[in-house]
Length: 233
Ligand SMILES: *Cc1c(COP(=O)(O)O)cnc(C)c1O
Image (cartoon, rainbow, N blue to C red; front, side, top):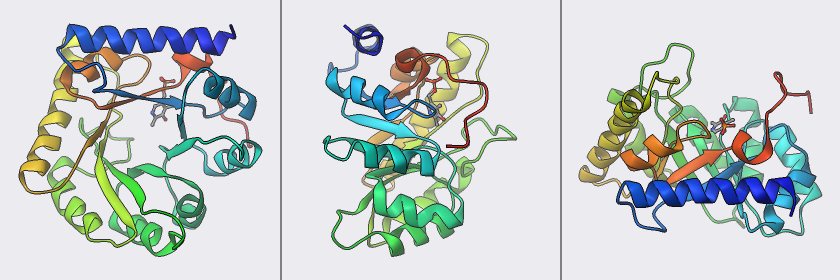
């Protein structure tokens, strides 16, 4: 067994244990393997161990990996910040984007999504804890952005994504994730057809699942520690 396979098994066991502990259905929470900074070979090994969905932060690095792994039936999620000059690459190559936080980016993604592909799945990144350095739409503005994005023809609005600052303990982390869950439910009450709450990473997947995450994004617990700075790949 490869190291990646054994770590994937550990992460799946953590997700399953959290689902049992917090009363979530066995299939209620999906796993996104975050492969940023790791080579195509690492993605290949994770796929061989049954992983299908992969998250990437650096768009050019991701597109290079997709080309190297073209023959595999993978689902690619863009989870990193998107500059205007990168929207075309994202629209042409990814299946999902979790990091849309302003209408201008959404409009470009919709306009640039190729006709031959299904609509691009989108989550709005919400700055749920008001972290000063984080991207993300303010919670109070999420509903208006969601309505505008839902109206774009080549996007399919799926849900919300959060990356809160690390909190000191389980209870505090749960509290932040619960705010995101409440916003998610509120938007659904307002008629937005959301099914995805993308929250929880290696360090906080348990409180995220307790709060209602439907998709955890796990990098280091699967692939190992990343270099301090991403390479210019
Ligand atoms: C890197 C990253 C992750 C994975 O983080 P780990 O702590 O390595 O699990 C998840 N989501 C986003 C947006 C990331 O940038």
